[in-house]
Length: 178
Image 1 (cartoon, rainbow, N blue to C red):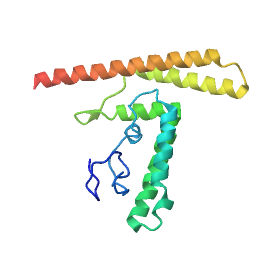
Image 2 (tube, helix red, strand yellow):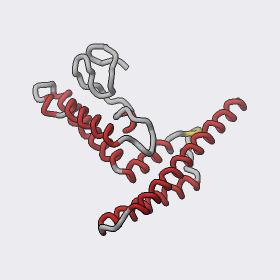
Image 3 (cartoon, helix red, strand yellow):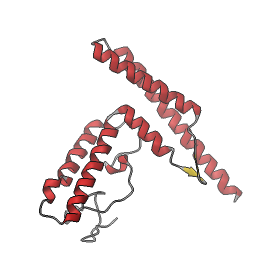
């Protein structure tokens, strides 16, 4: 990708590091926005650090003297950044978002359905998160619940991996038929 203004190679998706110009909208998932892999477990300190850096670069106050178009783009990009950060920092929202973007893979025109085993793991993960929140709010010892949550996350990661492997096998089989 190159900058739309100075035509230098972009280091990030939102702002050119050479000339400081905001870049036009690009379809990008929340993980790519922060330079993170699409995983259930992410490094929260890295997410927060990248969020703060991008927030500073995109803040509308930095574009007070810019064109109307750049001011609007700054507001839009700041809003998108805030939405992405909120979704990725919350474990439940992150799972839901990950499922949504993974479910967008299409075979023909129909969206693929998540395997029942994966949905069951997500349900268990959500239940564990709810129990953990309730226990924390009640001031209870949460070590056992935290262990259950970690086990559920591990199982979820395994199921996502199986789903990706099955998708690759199906695509390979379809490719040989053509």
